[in-house]
Image 1: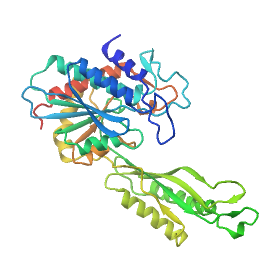
Image 2 (image 1 turned 45 degrees about the vertical axis):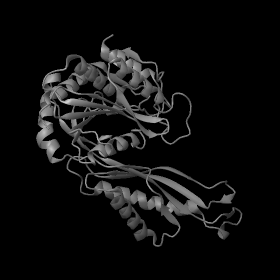
Image 3 (image 1 turned 120 degrees about the vertical axis):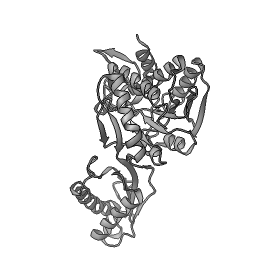
Image 4 (image 1 turned 120 degrees about the horizontal axis):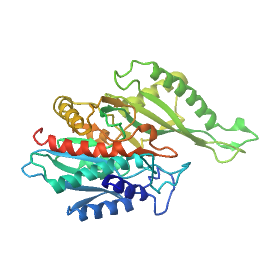
Length: 388
């Protein structure tokens, strides 16, 4: 078993499930065991690392390789957490290699990319190539739900000139992606006995009117002038709950709204446009409120530095490492590059695997891609030593 496969197997075997706001518990929930493993891994390599507190039981793990004489630092980011294991048809934490693929929860998203980055990091420490950049390796928490780890990292001075974020991109370079904002809308009513519903005000009926407007508004977004690369912004309602009993007219109903942002949009603008659409159709909304968002991840857009300075060098580095010229692409999903890029830091997203395999019932990643990604990550750091 080669170093990449061995390390990826170790990472997949350690549960690091993000509860995603659900009341999940047990030793496999949150990233604590994964963080402990990473600290030990860096220590065995002779590297002192930092635990960066994010929230109770959740810590980013940061480690640095200081290249001799380097004036440029590259930030590698890979998140520690995975989505839950509901509905999986394979043992989620029993890494299994079959047909050149490694199966298990997180193998594609994004422990394959993390293993590739870590192997590249270890190679830099061993070989200390002349002229390379320095490297800050950040293993962040809570990427799958609220991006608190990347937001904490973005607010902390790291000294990097460029961030490379691991996500499954099929070894293409992603320089832009949509953002995501999620919030609740709450309708209020007046409770009463269900035998006399005319004495109350049914919050679920009120929310039904809201939902029809939102469905029409979502269609209008799809028909709007799209971003030339990322397409149109989108809106979706993913959850609804309300009431307390079937024999009580409900006095509350809540929905959860997912709005995908394109570059140039903010939550404030997007939510105000939704509110205006509701007012236009429904009139006074004194019975409705929008709660503060629990996810507010900005979109990623290329800036001048990423487009003119970094991308040509990154294309060259990936081509040298893999024998294939990567595409420059945009994707509809969000990543840790959103919060990092919002600070002005040039960011690209790059990694092994196909997003179609992320979060699936039999999640897997092609091991050849993980090995190629490790070569590419190493080459990036070697080639970018004087790019800053």
